[in-house]
Length: 264
Image (cartoon, rainbow, N blue to C red; front, side, top):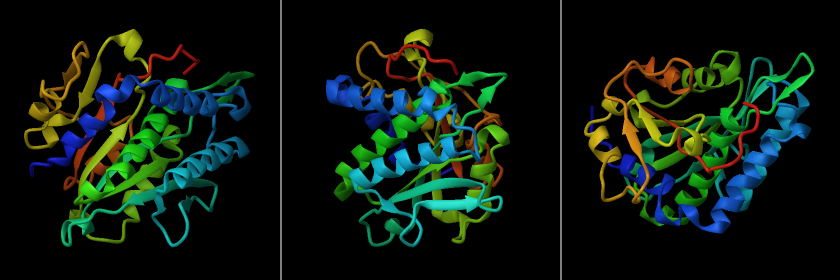
């Protein structure tokens, strides 16, 4: 696999020294508590509550200045418009590399209400969605430094069998070789409980493990673990990309905001 230096950007952004600043902490809490609130009833795909979550994410991206990926639209509907991915782009600046892509994805759906109990989905995956929103904010801030373009995707219907990510990659209209890296952010809200950041799939990226474990970019006191090798977890959206076998994939678990546990 090719060396993907942008991977270092991901590590720098997700765990910088500024991560502890109150404004960022407050924004992450706002995203998680909004998406995992009882009012959103567990964000089951195909419901009005899923659409409420979709509207929230789009409003955040508009405020940040993230462009819609499609013609004047963030929405990629599928399954007869029952479900919808949300896709934005931050364009790179290199004359050649701007036409290549790094994808950062997180599913925003959960399982809804079962037997009268709201499954809020704070960790799975309001935490990952919140992280992706704030990654987008930071990437937009440093857009002038980006060479490749960044595609942000909030996947729908992951809980129904990775339907959103499968739809996106199977309907990708450019050569697959233009997707150089896919990073999945899933269930990252348990750092305080688990006590570590776990990165899966580092072996799919040349020198991936070395970049993730680079002591120069890991804040003191933060425990980071890199899984040695595959298989890529088939229970998260990176799997849809891994099946194409030409895209480096990367998934992270366990790094979070220290928020109290809300029912998964």
